[in-house]
Image: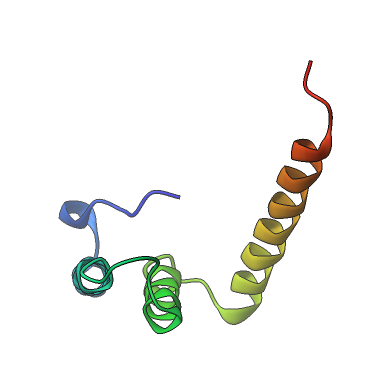
Length: 80
């Protein structure tokens, strides 16, 4: 899902957009993968910008988990 355009968002969403931008900038300053705390913070802000509650986020995580398993299975299948 793309992050909504800040020029057409409500004031709260613009604030969340700016917070996401700053957190991502901070997270990318380090070497290697971003820390779990940055990852969780970014996920919570993105959920907020879309107005997702914890139940809806669980659905997102479940769908991502299924996609991850499908990718692993696809990689095990012979090519051709």
